[in-house]
Length: 449
Ligand SMILES: Cc1cc2nc3c(=O)[nH]c(=O)nc-3n(C[C@H](O)[C@H](O)[C@H](O)COP(=O)(O)O)c2cc1C
Image 1 (cartoon, rainbow, N blue to C red):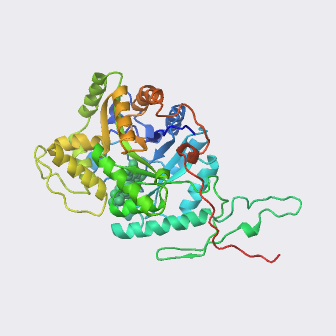
Image 2 (spheres, rainbow, N blue to C red):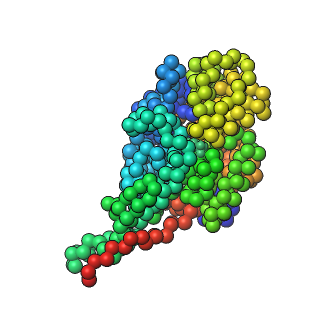
Image 3 (tube, rainbow, N blue to C red):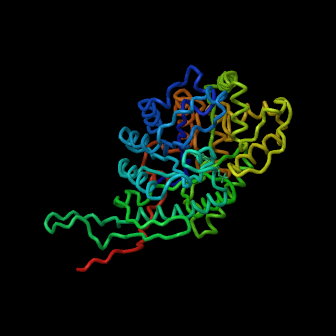
């Protein structure tokens, strides 16, 4: 372990790039989401740059159904993320592998089993991003008329996480003795049947999987509302966040760390990692030119549609794009992000057009356009200023944006002693400095001697 606190880095691997028009750039692989060997190349590049993890977001739907705009986006094809990470686990050795799994549109047994399996396949590199699902369109793919209410989704999520952890503890770590002499494969006194009966779930158990190598895959959480922060404070080991400006990020950081401590947990063992959208060049001019090129490729239909999506589906089509953003009604989805967007528009007095040019680009996450030194300065400022323990890096394009970050910014962070130059451990928990959770013995099975 380095004595100095260091930055954690995730690579948010997303289509051909995070800029919605990025796929049209010469430096982008336009078929990225159809191309598993390209995804493997990106994971290996991130590993060569010593990132802590690769992160795959997920939705069980095409994110929007405004087809006029969606046909211009490189996002309708999304591989099931645990399946893709399972493939990536075979071509990487150290980097953590984190994916989203919805607590609203899946069952604890499925999540425990698939992420537990990924932890085995990767020798302890799995992480689960717990989301209550922001996209109401998913309801229609699961036989429901509508998306459950925000408060109900979070109540289900809290119980979901406890059941999943209980299932991962179905066997103690040393239950599998495989004694050829006695013919006993596992020690039944180390088997635990959960017998969970709660408000949302009835799960007997046990899980048909030994305890995962990390005990539990790393728990990540990304909801920014009050209920989301509370769930994060109770359960998460990594918190993904959306913050535009340093003071907001500092306030978020202080708030979630205080909530973690209030739950009797060690706040230093919960890593806050805001999204970070860097457009990097060898000089600031080169970065600005690249940004201008990306923005030229952004079609107005796409910008408007994305802004509407990110503000909870509010229809902006009847408003003057060069006029101000109207007051947005309270909604049930993505509350934290809507506030970030509305605050930005107000703070900088942005028209709808200027706002979508900003928001469609980074989806509300912090953006910087500059040289490697400027980007590293900003990361250092946030890291030292108690706004972040690390960053979920969102390159505007793949591979060019990742190559620029890995070859220009990573060495600068390393030179400053802010980022590792090699992996010290082999598991994601070790990269992040997180302890392995103790086994909680629940529902022990008693067999006659
Ligand atoms: C970095 C990051 C990644 C996210 N990934 C997903 C995702 O993959 N799927 C999803 O449905 N929501 C995702 N979200 C959204 C949140 O987890 C959450 O569902 C949403 O913000 C609504 O919760 P809230 O009202 O508590 O903010 C992500 C958010 C962030 C900041």
